Length: 249
Image: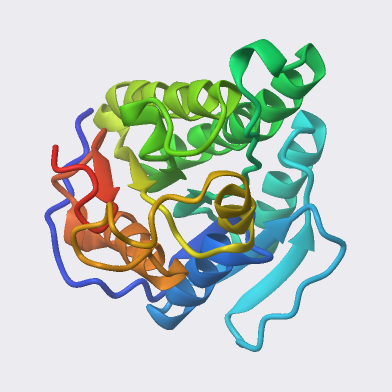
């Protein structure tokens, strides 16, 4: 049965959202933005604790590379809140090493976090959303996946490219049951992870960004909230570029 959901206001009242990689940077900004839009948010990250001064946000430690831990968190969320309407996938890590200097261990680590850290939550949450007849997933991709990297190494580019492809598959597979899946692909955003890039190979100071500045976490968070909200109910399988004009695709 095809589920039809018409686009509407951005209000997320009554919806339950799970955010991975939520302790800092884009994930934290997204958790706060979802709560401000009315959602009840379970913020997760590998760190033991994180402070969110918002009554709609609960926090739980989660290692997204562990399938068993992810499945248990999803089970606990359903028991606590009754449903999962929104899944936001922000957990990630980066590498800068060129191909010939990269190691197998590095590749495995980058793929475990950036790719399997998306696969595990999607695999656990997709059946929940299909039973509900509605759900929105948004994964954090990267401009690197579209242009072959900015200052990151090939393992990061490959992992993010795989995330783009995975979410398009989910969008096709889930559409008839009301499950949406999309990607937000940021350009350079001023977060702790991006600082490691600029220390290694900084682009010219905003010179390659037509809008004249690097992004802020809220720039990306608001784009994610748009794709997670009823405003975007005729959008799925898209890659939304949020990069200050670096890539005009």
